[in-house]
Length: 92
Image 1 (cartoon, rainbow, N blue to C red):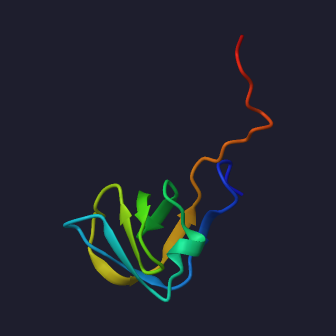
Image 2: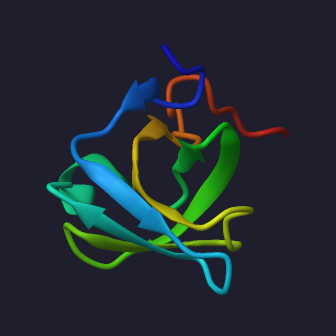
């Protein structure tokens, strides 16, 4: 389990297509709005990218373009940091 969230390197449903010209990711049979949140991380072809904006179930943008372009790839999810309110203390 990820120390930040509940999911660590779990394959997401469907496949993705990436582009080197921009940070767009187009999914096929994906459910981005259900499974991925802004600030989460995706591992695609062994590289880690941060999700900037989930637009729909089949489109999201990354904070930077991927190193290689291609389609029919599996993406793996690592959730971004989650606030643990129980361990948060105010310094006096």
